[in-house]
Image 1 (cartoon, rainbow, N blue to C red):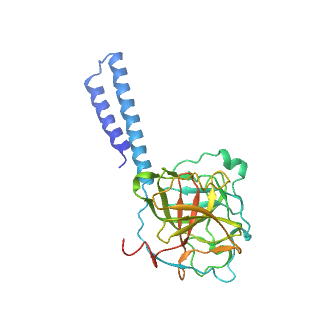
Image 2 (image 1 turned 180 degrees about the horizontal axis):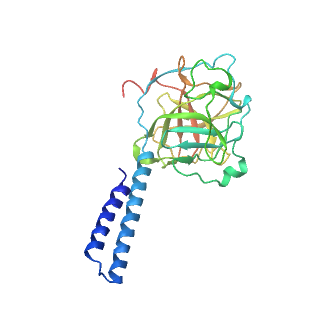
Image 3 (image 1 turned 30 degrees about the horizontal axis):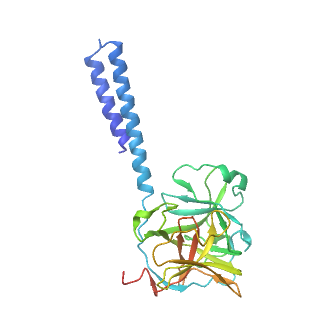
Length: 294
């Protein structure tokens, strides 16, 4: 039973008792009692709401592990939207109750102009607006679709707000913060920290370059920047954990990135710095993630 219901039942019993015992109570006393009742009910509602918010924003503990070998995209797979062109700006929302991420898609996606000022209500949270750096994108299966799906059956489409359609893009498998949990809160990453989110996402990305922005932890794990909040990569502004570096490097041929896990699995590690710049992991120091020694 919700806190609100418990408090309401208690207050109802109390006021009924007082009404029977104090039929001759003057107006002032009744006003005081009414004020106490209102304050108690409002307090109960606020408390319950805060507990709900706290519950749904708790970080997801990583309970899976996966092989750090790339997963091949099935031959003849359909790309969501029927095109491999990058949309430029990602319009994504997170369901905090289910840890699913949706992207505007399907037959009636939310227009850019509406997206800019629209305020979502819990459990939905608007992902930070990000300008994408990859040049081609093929989302070839929703995380809850069967592996041998074909065509449109590979994509889960749902209506969420005002009849707009959203495509299930990702499910969060786990979240972490380095060097410790103190520096990360949803999209906010404190200077000197990075957030790490492991996601189930069947997505092929192509970076044509000629410049890539590569994050490295000094232990063999490397990440490529795929999005920024401003549209302009910043390699000097981020304050990274000790031993981490961010550099620009030139490439002579496109970087094609596929999910990891091997076989039928699709996993990515996505990292964010304190400037809300996001990175996909492209190289692992170990054969399994998380490392078996940890």
